[in-house]
Image: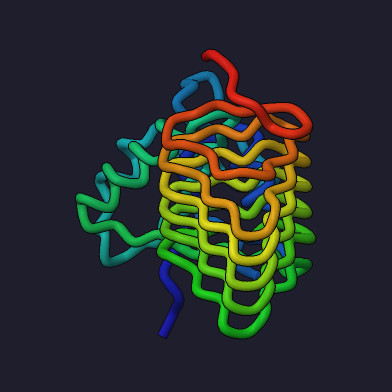
Length: 213
């Protein structure tokens, strides 16, 4: 029985990284969608850009698997909205694990989670639906990340940390053991979080302190 075809939704930089990871795993996508019509009919890393999202919406949800190609540099609102829209229509999302990532035993990955090149997930980690452990991210034992969380490249999440839904952890940030990050918070790049972060807060610096958006 043949495997379902994979389509990547979104044609930007994050999508390019995902296509590379999928190709290394032997699951070259059948196509990519892009909101920019100028890219339609072109190729991204050799994979055809088949049109906008409507090109995939016309397909049977039972016949394909999707990969969320939208990245985020802050609160991942657009990424979550895309996932929820397609999920509500019955589409399933493929869990992407780069061949260079280290995913230990007893790690739980939600629907459509993405673990990219060089990322390390230690025993007991839970990474929720549509969440990303990006390039070189390290998530230590028993840390939990909810839905639509983006742990950006090089970030370090230490043991027992709890990250609630819709959180962006910036590149190179460090979260101390046992801290809790509330829903919708944003951790700035390079921040060192040593205390709990309230829901919706934006923090940055060493140690991390609240900022005004």
